[in-house]
Amino acid sequence: MRKAVICILLLLLCGSGIAQKKGRPAATRKTPIALKPYKFNPDEQLNYSILWNNVKAAKMTLTAMSNGEHGRLVELELQTIGVARELVKINDRFVAHLDESLFPVRTQWRIEEGLRKEAGEAVYDRKAGAVTIGEQSYAIASTAHDLASVFWALRAVKSGASTVIDVFSPIEKRSYKIEVEAVGRSELQAASGPVPTVELAVRMRMAEPDKYSVRLWITDDEQRLPLVIKARPPFGEITMQLADSMPQQELN
Image 1 (cartoon, one colour):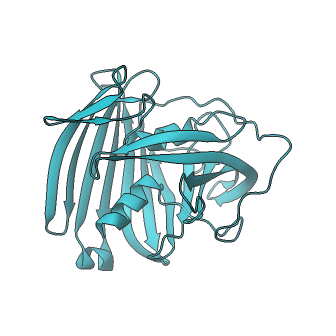
Image 2 (cartoon, rainbow, N blue to C red):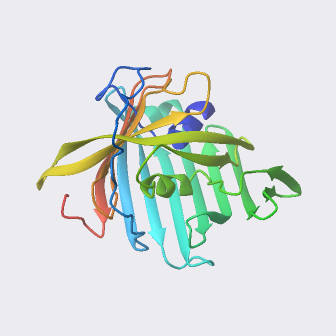
């Protein structure tokens, strides 16, 4: 289950099969999809419902605030619910203090996954290319994100060709590389009507890059709200969908 939780966080709980079959690479385009500039909102809370094989299994909250020690603070909270909570009790919380470029300067976490409990703090030194946890240092890319800030990094993906995002997992003490590419436009139905979105393919840099068929649909505006994330890891299909947000958005 621990690997499942890391997969959910790292791969953004997204999935796929809606736009293409599992393992099938995105079609080659002559003209890259242009994305509107992203504007960070320091007063935002996004609440998500997570389905595992169409059964509500967890909930996740993404919060952005302006009272961080470096001006920006983001938080991710993940909890299992219902039958899934009877199988394994998960209460995970990740907090990241970000700089002006949305990179983490200091992060803290507290995880409770079954009998496993852990808390810690990581301090990033980008000039030295290292992150310190306790008395141990680990080499990282100068552009590394953590498990919380990676969601905002995805929202801030630039227009054009595919973008590579470095992610350091403080739980596993290792780094990952994910490739993000805008592969299409579509409309998702919301209470207020159809919402224009951009579909992002999120692939791991490994032997089978599209192994989990991760897809993310974000609103085609400066808010870049992640509306739906889908994935097909080995343990079943996962769908994460925006349930509500604070302040309330027009699409709710």
